[in-house]
Length: 112
Image (cartoon, rainbow, N blue to C red; front, side, top):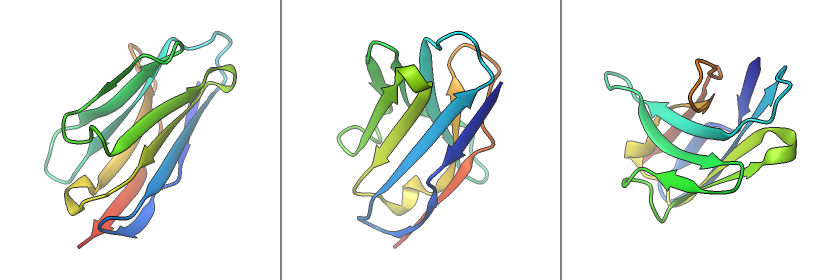
């Protein structure tokens, strides 16, 4: 199983980015996918996750600014990030929730 994440980059405070993550090599439809992030010196934390049916959960710090959505047929999850803040700077990882499958991560850097 491979999770290929993309879409990170450098953006100014207040800007937007959309991350995507496609799961391949899996023969069943995943039930739930999510995004985590890890900043230097900090623990990895949940950003948002979503079920195939579209049920979502968000960290309080991103509610109202980030939107997670899924293309269940393609086992692909997206994270639309708006009103970005410097404290959102981290490496963002996608995962199939409940498994040990993680993507390689994509760096998001927000400048002030």
